[in-house]
Length: 70
Image (cartoon, rainbow, N blue to C red; front, top):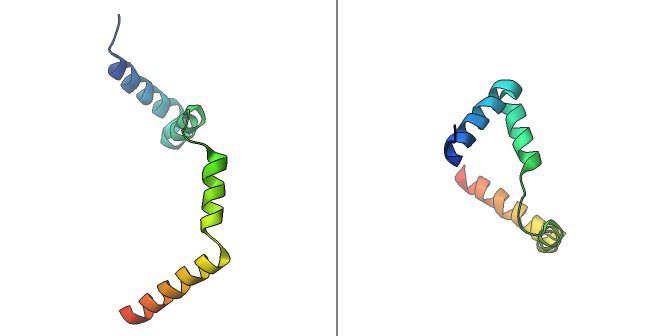
C-alpha cells in the first residue's frame, strides 16, 4: 500500500519513539539531519562578535538591570 509522505513520516516517528524512547528518537533524528549553513564561518563570526570587552559590557549591563529591578 502506498501512503502519502506525511503519513509515512508520522508512522516512522511513532516507530522511532516506541523503539528508542522520545530522547533516543530525538538523538537519532539529530544525527541524520542534513543541517544547513557553514558551521566554521558561523562559529568564527560568533567568536569575533563576542570579545572579552563585549562580554564584560553585557555582564555589567545585566548586573545594573538586576540592581534596578530590586
